[in-house]
Image (cartoon, rainbow, N blue to C red; front, side, top):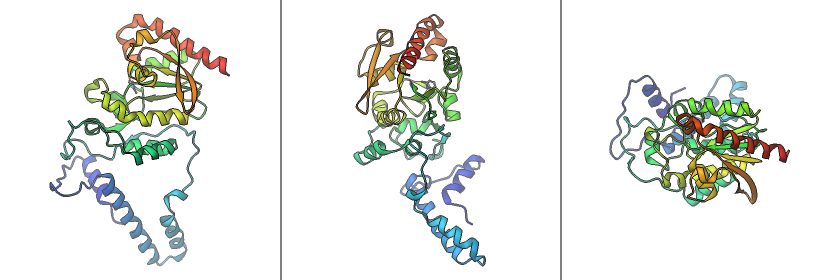
Length: 307
Ligand code: URA
């Protein structure tokens, strides 16, 4: 079986044999459209090879598999297990010069918005993995960081954006701030995963961990909203200024917003939300840990009350 063009290029890159060159007017072989084309050619090749095979039994089975339309493949239910690492399909910046990294982020078109609003957890993760809305972030990311969620989780923590460790591993809060967050949760008797889902406002790492920009937050907000609809939490912890300001539609600071129970509208339901400091801020300002502890206790109380 021949290797797909896009697969071959990714292999060269992984082995650091690259770079590969693209003519100014040629299509990028790693663009989602080119990969889809590759895959469809590969599928039709498989069907042809199978029908010419000398082993009729196997051939029939393989041909059937190759022809099963995508929508007939059973999907996992809406509340889905842990999301796997999503390595991005775009190559690192050194190899492709065709994205204007200084261009502003753009919002998804109406067709994509409609797909986001009906996507299940896995479909949404795949859409995020191939998202190209924020050129600067696309150019810099190694992975997209979709979030971690288990079907039993009733609390959702919304952070800011992946940092270096998260970008490397494709999972949220896995660095120093993640360690602190996990300790806080453990101290509250909550387990990351089975009790608490973790997502971010942005799914891609901003260069040098700079603040998320308004256009990026707007572009990514459709994914964030849909994640919250699917997760359907009992309590939300807004663990960053950007999460609080976006979801509460305010410009107030974390200091002003914390200490009260707010409401976030999710699919027509009013979900209680607590604002707290971002774990990285707690690492820099340990005196704020006392306040953060109160915030998490308040969130846990809301969870217990609603049980
Ligand atoms: N900070 C965040 O806001 N999110 C992460 O996933 C990691 C660090």
